[in-house]
Length: 338
Image (cartoon, rainbow, N blue to C red; front, side, top):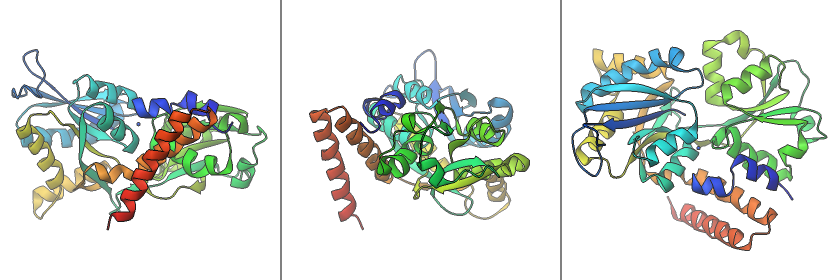
């Protein structure tokens, strides 16, 4: 049965419904969290998902956090997280009230952690989308046709189970249409973040891995020697970039300050706007645009498609019906949108 084993292990299926980079905002004050209580925040904790950790990510984010502190009228301090799941759970528990999430974890936060999308990121080329990729070592001779032939010839590095580009998009656009289960296709399958997968492909530890165009561009800027050792053999169609997610029960005044901060940051003319644009450039952004939950519908379709595959493989009639209904709803919605 196609993808049944992988779907259960990766979390595509039930986990995708129940619970997929980079920032979160948590509020703490006098032992009680700001939210429905409406009490003012004493501190805004800005949680950043970073594979490299605080040493490398901290200097890039700190100028933005300092500016955010002035804009929202509260101290802002960084907190570094290690997984998508941790960000979602922190928001669900009320320890995180807002944050930057990539598309799939943003959907999980909206569905399960009382969140809403208020803005989306725009890259330095003016695009608010990116592409998943499949990478191999430069000069290895490994081709997409060779990878798709399977035969357990190659080792494979896939992304976090809740990664849009590292797992969901490759399954939806590459493996599932060809009836390929990665567990049966490759000699081994290991899950890691994009940075580790890229390093292990470049060093020859892995034969093939998933990545994305954002990570590829970042690697080219940070370590061009390593980037030269990586070759892209496949790209997905465009997928929505991440965005700023906030809890719906966040104090309305604070929520509006956060929204206004991101939507106006780096905009306009003058010395200050130029300085802010340099801060954004360090993060590989040009601006933040307004967005609502509909922006994530293409990823919702991908998630529903994978749930349908898993339900069919497991002969789960109720699951099949639910996934088909969700796909029908999303496709009908897309057809009537301008």
